[in-house]
Amino acid sequence: MWSFRAVGFAVALTCGALIAGCPGQRTSAPASPDSPAACAADETVREPAVAGAFYPGDADELRSFVTDALAAAEPADLPGRPIAIIAPHAGYVYSGAIAAAAYAQLRDTAIDTVVVIGPAHRAPVVGVALPAAARWRTPLGEVPVDGEICAALQQASDLFAPAAYAHRNEHSLEVQLPFLQVMLDDFSIVPLLMHDLSDGECEEVAQAITAALAGRSALLVASSDMSHYPAQADARRVDRAMLDAIAQFDPDTVRTADAELMGEGVANLACTLCGLGPVLTVMRTARELGADSAVVIDYANSGDVPGGDATRCVGYGAVVFCAPEPSPPAREDAEPAEEAGQLDAQQQALLLALARETITAITAGTAPPDPPTDDPAFAQRRACFVTLHKEGMLRGCIGTLEATQPLGEAVVSAAASAATRDPRFLPVQASEVADLHIEISVLSPMREVADPEEIICGTHGVLVEQDGRSGVFLPQVATEQGWDRETMLTELCAHKAGLPADAWRTGARLYVFTAQVFAEDEGGATKGEGQ
Image 1: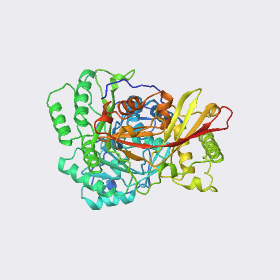
Image 2: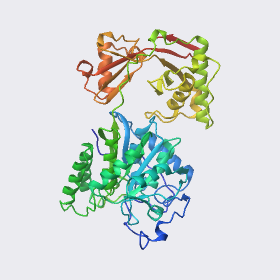
Image 3: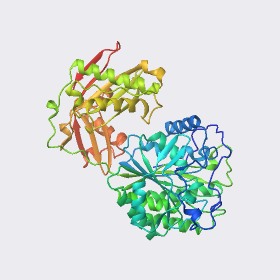
Image 4: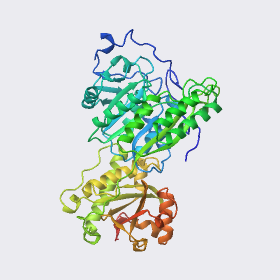
């Protein structure tokens, strides 16, 4: 489900121009794309072309805008792990909130490589234009280009060729980078430009990208605005139809919808998707990489923005393509919960102090502390959650269900994320740290249960999973809410997993775990319980 909305925040930009849509295509292009001047790899760093026009040119102002936009974005109940997104590429005042709505869904997703595919507006491109520069710069710093993947793509298909001229003045890829720079810590990019290729060419490009990304934790980004230049009512109707087609996750349906809408003679409609080729290519690649669903996150158009022209609109949509999360395995080699290892009072106190030191450092802009290494308990791989309360109200809660890190590292990671990356809340400020109450839940391995009657409220945390959707409650949630088993499972299905309320009765898989929960008391000491 999704709905239209106006852009949810405003900010003053010191930009030379505010761009609602795409400038005219194929301007400032070289006389011939095959000329030596056009194709020479004459730059090591691709400098920003539209900083100060499409987005702020000042680093602090840019980071503030992107951070605020991401904080304002609503988290969605996704049916799985994000594989790809569609995000707009107009001036941030017009489309920044919608782009943020897409990027905000990537929180806590492991990503090391981002393939960004956009339309070429300012230069003729045959096939797909690879970058020539080794790094791309924005006011927020430089991002490395993944030369290994670029070389693999060029070797895989004749459709790929380096073309520095095509990238030099193009905005459709550049405007995506600040969002990636704020969201991700360490990543490389593969920036690709194209026009609207045939279905066969899109499939060839998708196959090449899929093969090149083997072994990577990758994200695909299709950079595209939507309808160009109709009146607002027509823009909304056309864009709704295209988003409905995209939600079916079928490239043929999207191609057909585009042809039908363009054939209707809508006044001033120049296109339904200025990045039709990139969108179709990303859809095909995402499916090859395991995505099986498309979720429309948000929509607006330039007429929704104060000062926007409602007689001549450009549409902006945010879409996420998801792969089903792998079901938590009932690990044969896992320890029983009662043998997983309970932490004593001293160990609990050390972890709570570690969490507080981490949050203090993160909010002060300094490096988090190193976890202790002198206790073997902190070196064991354990899953954990860190929960923050302020004045009795939830202020953040993030963790993992799978034991992927040593416990000390897991607490540092969860504490930092709970303070700064919970999409439900603004990041914790340094002035708030003293008022936080910190709770840590160290989880046992997970096991599947065949009968809901096996679940004990207050003892078991529960994960429900069906059709790629999942949701989880920690053991203490049912006790805090005063729920019995039936109420807890109903709430879990309906409000956490986005499933029918009775899914737990009708085939959904249920997994349970226990947790040792301990927290600071009012005086700063440790208050714990083993569950």
